[in-house]
Image (cartoon, rainbow, N blue to C red; front, side):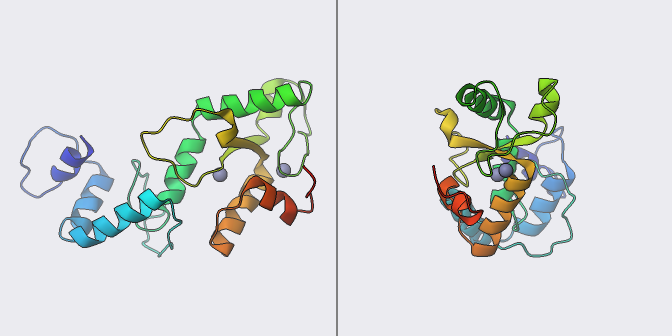
Length: 181
Ligand SMILES: [Zn+2]
Ligand SMILES: [Zn+2]
């Protein structure tokens, strides 16, 4: 379906009636004659590597899943993390393990406001421990996602970017001086 959309961005559409988003058009214009580059990017995405982020000047374009060389993987990662299901699981798991309270699994901090729960929860984000799973793969375990304070979530991503390596939770805790379990 996605490919049909992109195909529709061709100046003389094969198939009328399919919607063409700004991104579809971008993809067509920039990649339709670069199959090798597309193959290279696809392999990178599959391997889950972080990509260098060249300045394409399209930072604000809302991406429909994939595209734009810089940050493809990161965008997919973040999209996955926004999944309400993943977030809910992580929140529930941490609550259960802390007598009903939420704690960051990085720094251990709780939220400044504990009531109501929706406000407490707003201080936390789910972080996916694997940079990228297969798109079709479903999460089987709540442990695939950890619950981090918004600050720790930023830090773990910044570290991954700077060090070019995805940090496991233990490695991250070490970096912030919380080495014990
Ligand atoms: Zn934290
Ligand atoms: Zn994350």
